[in-house]
Image 1 (cartoon, rainbow, N blue to C red):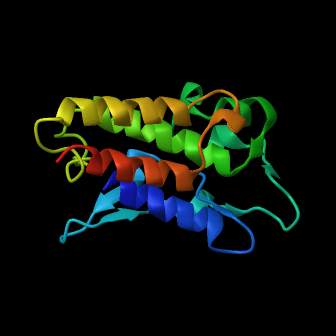
Image 2: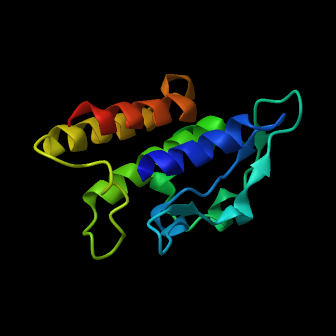
Length: 159
């Protein structure tokens, strides 16, 4: 299911002539419907990167986010620039929070992917991917398309 959320974010970043940045990816904005389909919500902070630009400048993060400042993308915190890689960072933080949180607090968003004897290896691979998403330098982070592909590979890696 994490792959499906990553795919939705990839769609926002690539399906339109100007990327849409969700700008508020966190576990509280992911819901599982009655059919087990994950839904990404919380689009009130979303924005569109202007044509010909790579980022949007925004210095008002203090009042927009429920996350502690230390969990915000470091590049955004330093520069106020929001890019597609800001969503990548937030997705990485979300993956780690889901892995580290008691399942009674959040739905098990990774449940469909983690199965069989190789669960520990899959959990480690997801944790490693989350850490790559949280690299300090935006250029060192994967794209959401690459994140989706990696989650698909992890899902299929162990029968």
